[in-house]
Length: 154
Image: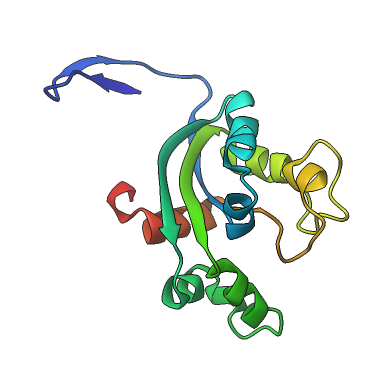
């Protein structure tokens, strides 16, 4: 990791035996509507993950279609699109050792009714569609999603 001072001067470089990985995370409109932002954020932070970037966004149809491009033609997509555009969401880039796998484990199974207790969805969701959070499922997805939501970081 490169450390710089306020003027942009290189101060020191630190290496880590556990290289960090970045993932995209979306706290969906149900998290915001239910007042669970802090509760959900604390799960990631308590695990030791770092929030690199975070922004509250109103997702429009175009952004939803780009984000869920692989699902646009599927039967379940129109209600998903309606849900994800129904209110503000929190978009984040989260970093840490094996962040993608760690975040997916913390999030739990997609269907909150089947997610294990102790996971975000297992503890806080009773829905397959309104399932609180999205996390990148692979390094390739993380790269694509971070570039879409936070182009300044790609």
